[in-house]
Image (cartoon, rainbow, N blue to C red; front, side):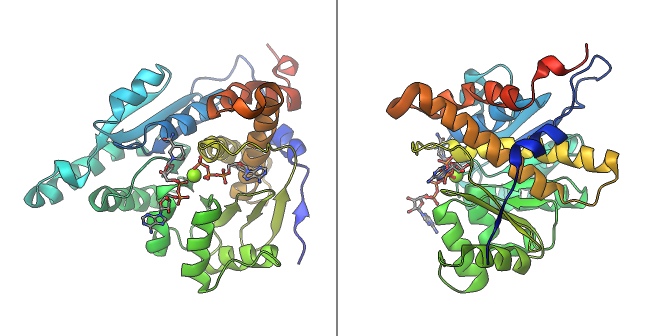
Length: 320
Ligand SMILES: NC(=O)C1=CN([C@@H]2O[C@H](COP(=O)(O)OP(=O)(O)OC[C@H]3O[C@@H](n4cnc5c(N)ncnc54)[C@H](O)[C@@H]3O)[C@@H](O)[C@H]2O)[C@@H](O)CC1
Ligand SMILES: Nc1ncnc2c1ncn2[C@@H]1O[C@H](COP(=O)(O)OP(=O)(O)OP(=O)(O)O)[C@@H](O)[C@H]1O
Ligand SMILES: [Mg+2]
């Protein structure tokens, strides 16, 4: 089975909202990243700042108490909530009450978000992951799209019911995360000879979630179709590029959903958002690599997000 290479730049042009003076703050998207713990502070920052640089109006991070001051210090643009707790800071007898407090803190904000990104730099602490499972359940009840990445995929692979049958979920596995998902869901090994069929089966088996399999070409399937994005890209594999991708998909998914509703179309916003997010990330990576070559790091790619979108969809053509 062959995947279909899509015209991703055209999709970006169609769904990117025009900039005009009638719009108010928030209409271009409010994104929240659930991630950031003692070990990882870069990943949630990369995801959240990428969402802003692409054009979201507000970008929040919900992380553990010790990750918050670090993430805040990277950028005053982000709204950082130090609400998550890891087992080491919670006594056994307090776990129930602390879990409901965490949920309460997130619930206050949840309805305002157009998309969540769950997992960049989340870590794998069991108590923290239990709380995050509850956040996913609440978001799902409110029909908020969720991009699942990094340690969020570790959680979901072991608890497929969290996303199974939820069409507004996008899973963005890297090579390791994909392998674990295939083993768990299809009880088989990764088959690179028929990668298209396998990603289709995987998405179907998880009840029509969208899978964005990252690699030399990104493969995107919701169990009905398989699209590929192979344009641009870079040979540099520094850590953090998947985090840019997750923030990017969150913004484009929100824009795709708005566009599809306004134009009364019958398309899957999760697939459209994944295609656009993938192309955006790959174009910025290619541009950064042409400037920085071997020394390219994730921050350099983030700096290229603006120019990459501008080349495809110039802001100058928007009405003032
Ligand atoms: N600057 C940063 O803060 C960055 C943080 N990152 C975060 O790092 C975390 C891990 O992402 P990776 O892409 O490295 O994940 P991978 O799953 O690719 O690898 C993680 C490590 O865990 C090991 N591992 C595999 N299966 C395991 C299991 N069942 N239990 C325990 N360990 C297992 C692997 O051998 C590997 O060393 C994520 O939260 C991710 O978002 C990355 O996004 C890169 C940048
Ligand atoms: N071989 C490749 N050639 C070109 N682009 C690639 C290649 N592999 C991955 N990419 C691109 O890099 C981005 C990140 O993919 P990667 O597999 O590095 O994610 P990751 O391991 O989750 O990253 P992170 O370090 O942020 O966790 C994706 O958007 C993908 O399109
Ligand atoms: Mg990753």
